[in-house]
Length: 280
Image 1: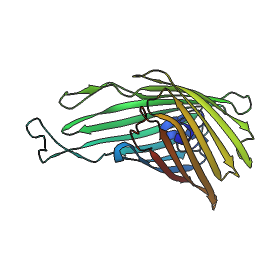
Image 2: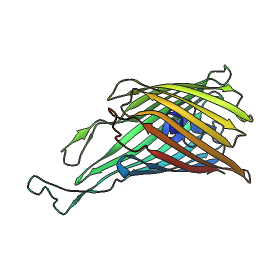
Image 3: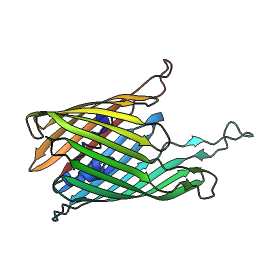
Image 4: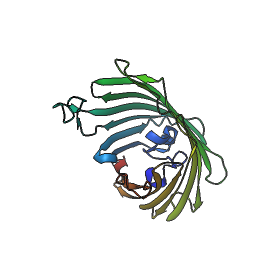
């Protein structure tokens, strides 16, 4: 859902997808929500993730959530200067992230969240692991449906491999965005949400995300978005489906990132993401 809106989701996040984009949005969940995600990523690699959240229904609307993501590309043949045709071994790479989240609704307009993540990356015979923290906030201004949200993700120490052969910065980002329904209201037969946000990554210049989501009969959603100041990413499109079954919701979403060509040359296939989830 978020990718279909060009990642302009920080101030929209009101479902289980908030687990990754802005955990404070999970206070919109009424009971239990879950989601399974699949991404057909670059160079024929796949990313899998699963998330679940439970609203404790306390006085402050506290929510507890867990999220697991895994990326394990296919191995490639190891080559050396003296064995350019291969050594007979493969070079394998993998990433794993496990997050535990706590969100709380301080008032009817303001929510806050903290998520603790265990992260691990393996590169051939090198491995690094550590912990990061995500912080999110969600605030309704009181003017119509306008809300302001912020997310501070991947805050943690720089990482080093087990043998200190290589090191890298954690991908720290700070997102601040606004969103509102510009036509209709949530739950109406048709309503349109617009969202825009600014992104400050630790290792790059400022970026911008803008997106739109149109719901029809609260069952079908059409989405589109645009990302500015990216090398390959630009336009994104997506669609969603929601169905109520016995008082429980079942959702399915798909999104495609349209990658730009480099000097007229196609660099990669367009990444495709699919999500299936629901509430009960």
